[in-house]
Image (tube, rainbow over all chains, first blue to last red; front, top):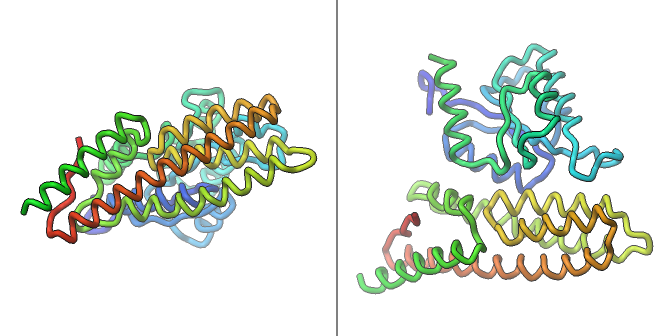
Length: 139
Length: 152
């Protein structure tokens, strides 16, 4: 989907290479120009460098590898990343992708400024929903 | 084009059976639907990296479980990764094995983990084999001048 000839752009933030590759290819298949980064810090760096995106797609279970909460994963890095992006003035759509459905972390993420979250893995239905939202925003 | 017809039927039957037997789930079917003439290698490209990465993960898991003092958090981190990547390409039985494996990690049950690793390897190589057969059939169909049928 294009708006006035320009393609929508997406930033994928995920710590796993296979997932980054998969999500990049899936989004590109729907004609989104996609960049991929490994974590929140790299995402912030891109925004500081002046990059803009129509949507940021973030994994909600990026682990704090040395943290005590590893079993079951933690969303703390993502709460921080979302908050930091919003604090920078990033107002594009930010969506989370999780394998943990509805949990207490979701409320925290939404409070931090996440627009919505979806059950992992990313699929064509989710991408189409995102595109519909983006089309509405730009019309 | 009798050959093409036969190959196409083989492809459809094989794909359907893989879905029915739980090897590949809805996620894989959706990925297949995104493949077309302008994106003929879509699925193969997505899956290739999964193959490379998985074999490294299985080696890492074996190493981690062989340590004098097993770091179950590290083992769990590897399994978590495998669960994510396998679910992204629709490898359902591999993903389900990862779920069971994580429970043993949380219990710090070494025997359980070792058994799961063996089962995980088994499921992974099974689905890898089946996917390679599927890709081979696709290539044969295209080489015979046909188009790969869309399933479902």
